[in-house]
Amino acid sequence: MFRRERSIPLRGSAAALCNNLSVLPLPTRSLTHFGVVHGPSAQLLSAAPEGAPLAQRQLHAKEGAGVSPPLITQIHWCVLPFRVLLVLTSHRGIQMYESDGSVMVYWHALDAGDASLVQAVFARGIAASGHYVCVGTWSGRVLVFDIPTKGPNIVLSEELARHQTPITDIATEPAQGQDCVADTVTADDSGLLCVWRSGPKFKLLTQIPGFGAPCSSVQLWQGIVAAGYGNGQVRLYEASTGTLHVQISAHARAVCALDLAPEVGKLLSAAEDTFIHIWKLSRNPEGGYIEVEHCHGECVPDTQICGARFCDLSGSSFAVTGYDLAEILRFSSM
Image (cartoon, rainbow, N blue to C red; front, side, top):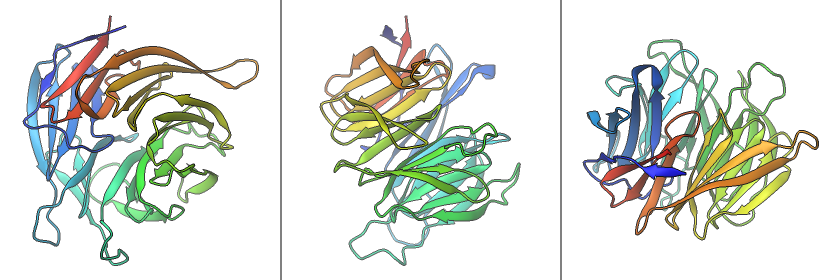
């Protein structure tokens, strides 16, 4: 069971975007960082365990070409083996900051040359894999950036071109040095999932076709792909083969966020039906198939949920954002 904790006030509400919450726990400092976007700016907040906000910072999208300020589409902390970067995507480009948002270390402008007059240009979907940061785009391409141990010498090393519709989300998991291990999953508006092995040259391992519903959020854990869809379903696939193991009619409306607590295999799903559910994933030791147990359900009445994330690796607390809600709601296990 979870109980409601002290919420964290925002200067404005979260934008009505999927996956609109990023969380970076810092247990050694007893702090948790939160990031939320709305319009042309992003809010960064730091809070102690009791919920009191200690610091706030606002980031703005780099202008680039154009008259009106660009809208931010996502913010996400990328935890690499040797540094943490804060990555911000917008309708004009990709910005990378030091983890506290104080210094911009890289700016990549989006090339709208191959976009039609009626097509929106944007970047969306952010994840770190090894010493690479992957960012999705409106064209379906995934940009792979090679990140140095320090400094601003970031290089666009590769573009993955297997999707035909805009990227919605990217998930990764450390491969721990194993060969032929699926450690990156990309999802798009058609529901197509592409499973990759990262490296100096990313290798496509399998494609999981869509079924008429967009995949808004995706996660990866111990060879299991968890995908949330616009029809409210959560599906669990075998990453290496694309085999469907479990189909859950988890929500009555579109899923807007998934998250995983890797230490315990808990999966969090949040949707436009105002519900957040927590599921326990495991593998049967004899058959190896995936098993799912429902652990908890929480309703946030009269709220269009935009983002939801665990606040620690063990899944003992989580946070929720909503459109027209000027606070981050927090829940912790009793």
